[in-house]
Length: 418
Ligand SMILES: NC(=O)C1=CN([C@@H]2O[C@H](COP(=O)(O)OP(=O)(O)OC[C@H]3O[C@@H](n4cnc5c(N)ncnc54)[C@H](OP(=O)(O)O)[C@@H]3O)[C@@H](O)[C@H]2O)C=CC1
Ligand SMILES: O=C(O)CCC(=O)C(=O)O
Ligand SMILES: [Mg+2]
Image (cartoon, rainbow, N blue to C red; front, side):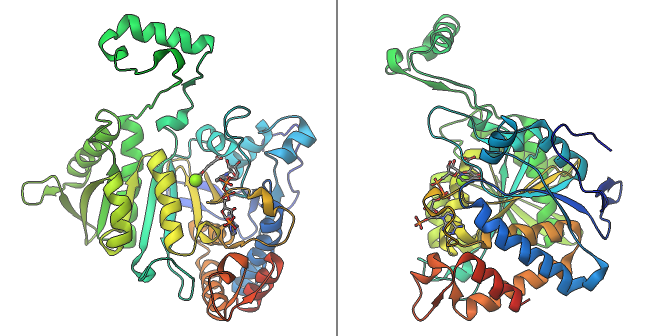
């Protein structure tokens, strides 16, 4: 067992392990969690009660989660002087499956995103964000039930690698000098070189292939009939365009895909499931998910596109208050489940916001662990509670005849409906 500088792991419970046959999940697994900043403590207090109740309702006394609080963000800084202590990363590696609330990232200067740092340091290359509609949820579109997509967002590359040079800094001057000397024709394209900041967008073949492979495997496992590569390859040819090309090549090489009508769309069949592999340019995709969402199932895309697309799609099915997510490395088995939204600081401590995003992330976590009965119980409770029109402020303001519940009361209602 690993040793920790600041943390005290639970003395009961067992470790989830990765075996050649997949995850081995004991009946009393230790699961590290980060409460999160801002509204994090409000939603975590609600969610953890729902998780324990779902496990109890599905398995009685036979199974139980042994929660292990690990620190990141403001709470970590207050207690240890560090924003993301090494102990936290070590616990997530050791126990494999963990869950977190949102963490603050200042805009402009200050610390880089702790959320992004967790994904990169743990190499959680697939950000998986399902977007599904629950009957009764208020939506700005006419037929929200047509939205049923699962986004696979590349999670370790793209502009999120954080290679940026601030206007006026020594680094920016050195970077500009390098560009001017080695690539004079391209340097001429910098319209205002004296005041430009610069960002670099690395996108690799390995990074693309492991993400797209995860999307293909998911489509086969779940019987989904299409995977769409979403990119802006017409403009960013050697990053976003390469993502598309590498994705198609992977389909051909590893899945035996055949071109449809001369291509570029492809089709392959695996384990009895026929999957169409297609691509669409990101801006066109953003209008088509409003006009023809039922043409899309599994989405594979780059990091920044995935960030935009996941919030846009979440809005169609009730907003980011209900959109769950997971960050997964399918090779090591390490997985960190997390709400899609941020810390919503103006609502912190008010027991007001919707805890569904982190609760449905827990539903994904149970499914990943093979605890499908607990996951199903959460889904049933969510459907029943929304249909009885007992909802938090975000849904209440868009619904007629609904009862407005606090975060904690919404958790009580879910538990009643488990
Ligand atoms: N994975 C993570 O941890 C993430 C962290 N962040 C960080 O969070 C901070 C704040 O970011 P910001 O851009 O304001 O985005 P937020 O997601 O925190 O909030 C934006 C708006 O979304 C709505 N919202 C968010 N969460 C909920 C919820 N649980 N229930 C109901 N409504 C909700 C609220 O809308 P309304 O005002 O209409 O009520 C809120 O004002 C930043 O530091 C950002 O970097 C952002 C995204 C993800
Ligand atoms: O890390 C952040 O602050 C933002 C992350 C984000 O927007 C996301 O994961 O969707
Ligand atoms: Mg986001």
